[in-house]
Amino acid sequence: MGQSVSLIHCADIHMGSPFKSLGLGNYSSDRRIDIKKTFGNIINLALERNVDYLLISGDLYEHDYAGRALIGWINEKLSRLGDKICVLIPGNHDPYTEDSWYRNYSWAPNVRILSSKNPEFRDARTSCYFYGMGFDAYRQEVLSITKEAEIFPEFINICLFHGTVDMPFSQQPYNPVDSDWLLKMGFDYYALGHFHKYDDSLSDKGIINPGSPEPLGFDEQGEHGVFFVRLSKNEGQVVREYERIVLQQRKYHDIDFDVSGISDSIQLKSALLEALNKKASKSDLVRINLTGRLKSGFYTDLKETGQSLAGEYYFVNIKDSTKPDYNLTELAMEKNITGVFIRMMQDRIESSPESERQLLMKALYLGIEALLTGSVEI
Ligand SMILES: [Mn+2]
Image (cartoon, rainbow, N blue to C red; front, side):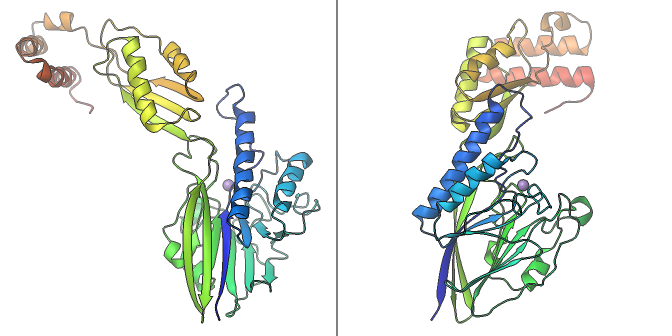
């Protein structure tokens, strides 16, 4: 007779994060509310899917910014799970220090905190064994283990781990281990946390890092969410089923936009809007990097363009990496190879059909760049 359990695996929620970097009006408080919404949605998901467990693999909150009110809010949400058990480990942002809320708060009875002193939880109801390897301090270069893991063949064995797996050790002094070492311990599932980008490249071996469910900045682009996991065991053989569920409130995007061929502000704005609409939704945060050469005589106030777009998206920032245009009239009069080249190309452009002109213009500019600087940037 086999057994089966289901769970939601998340990590790196970073409740209370200060979101200091953008310096934008309500940005920090808006984003903290977003994290709360996402966490609320994780709880709802656990209830809807009727899972046995919610696993939180470290960095549930940021200790430096989390006060009693926020901890109370988190605890109230977790208590809504009722008899579904939340198993969690402290990460490097919410370590198991003397003043940790994990030691100094009376958590709901369905919350199990696995610390280095007390790293195990055995649940006879479902025949599940949990073992946690988290953080006792903000920095931890070797694992803090006081009791070795046990593996119960007749149980489903789950390891929660916060730290770096398969990275150059000297650069990542946060619980560095390699995946072979983890796998040798013999767990059926490894619930990882620490890296905010999700990684399921070792999912066939039962190792998953779900990433942050709500991204924390422009270095966390793409989709973010949690994993729904079902583990079944029959005669010692484990079967794992995964589903990734995207839950974030907002996305961060970096968009490069080439201004070549654009001749006025109105055209620029509508072209930018078209590019944004393809990638972003109105609630997203977007950084646009303008490249290419602005046509001579085209003056545009990029700050103004940015502001008019900001009204349509949650956050838009425009960076101007364009280069000034060449003064073709002046350069064409020069009695040197550059002058000859420009006059020749201009004649060719004039006698060419409209459809070929843009390409020839590009060739003209690349040619000028090569002649003037000795190299071409493409
Ligand atoms: Mn984290």
